[in-house]
Length: 79
Image 1 (cartoon, one colour):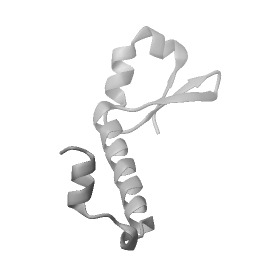
Image 2: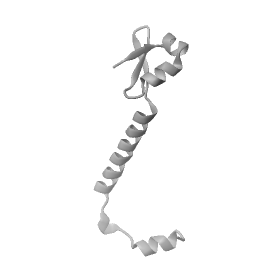
Image 3: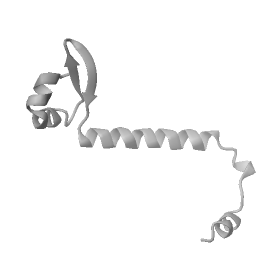
Image 4: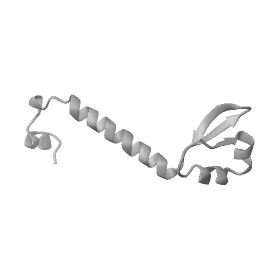
């Protein structure tokens, strides 16, 4: 994993952001990891993956035998 120091980040934040485009960039201060920069594309992929995981888990844990009729729910929601 590529790293950048806090001082390098302060000097050229645009370069750090572009360096983090495909893979996270580790931010270090005096040899200690303080954080990570993740590019826009990778961040969006991570969020989509997390949302899919949450959705799959909710579906697998749902007891559909206790479900309601769609028309009844639509009526309750006024749609």
